[in-house]
Each structure stands twice: as C-alpha cells, then as structure tokens.
Image 1 (spheres, rainbow, N blue to C red):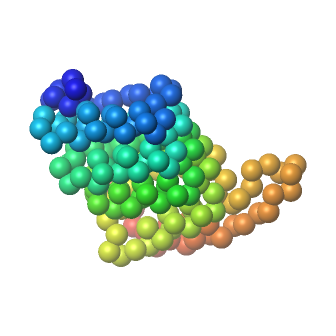
Image 2 (image 1 turned 135 degrees about the vertical axis):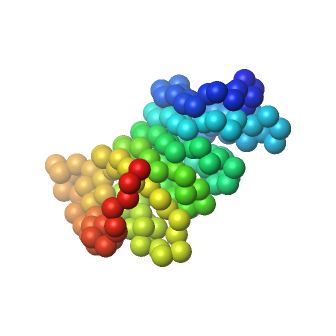
Length: 173
C-alpha cells in the first residue's frame, strides 16, 4: 500500500520477480488502482521478465487505460510471454492513454499476428497510440523461430509495419 500513497515515487522496477499474472493483479488492485490514495506520480513501470502472459496484461490494462495516469510515460514488459493476444490487449489500452510514449516489448513472441496488429493501430487515424520508442526485438515478427526447423517465413507483418512507418511523421518525445 506504500506504493499507492507515495507521492514521490516516479519509477517502479519489479523486473525478474516471478510475479506472474496473479502478482500483477495484486499489484494493480492494491497499489496502483486504489480508488483512494492511488499513486499519481509514477512515470516508469518495469515488469520485465515476470511471465505475466496475456492474463497479466488483462489485469494491467485498466491501470494503463485510466485517463488519470497522465504521468505514466514508459512501460517495460520485456520477456513476459505476452503473445499476440496479450499484445492486442496492451495496445488497445495504450490507445486510451496518449501519455505512454515508450514501450519495451522485447522477447514476447508477438509473431506475425502482433506485427500486423501494431500496423493496424498505427494506421488508425482515430487511434491515439502516441508511442515514439518501441523495442520489438526478438519477437519473431516474420514467423521464424528456428531456421533449422524450416519454419515458414511470413513477411506480411513486418511489411505492414514498414508501410505504415513510411507515412508516419516523426514525433518528438
């Protein structure tokens, strides 16, 4: 509860704590989204390498979506097994919070599905995705997980992203 009432905490780094989906649900319920005494100073949230999966992102989404989180700018969810479904949930939440400008999503197996969804969100003229720094490294965006296994190469997701980025004006963060 100290996180909820702390008005000076600007960065919360909980990397590599094996929180899983259950831990994220507790964190959001007890510390971040309390109706009374909620933290209003958090700028950076790092939950990397906690195996939160799609279920953990569903717990985190209401906090991200909340319009009162005007200071939250950076979210790191690297290496959390989000998959394409978790990524969709996350991007839908971020569309409601234009203050989030930096996303760390490396090593989440977003795949071709995630790449195509990102392109859709970036292309949407009504969308409010305002991200100007995005780490998508090691996400199999072209469908390849192991060249030795002869996985099928599917460039459609990365092609969609490239096409959108050609028309996106540069943003200053």
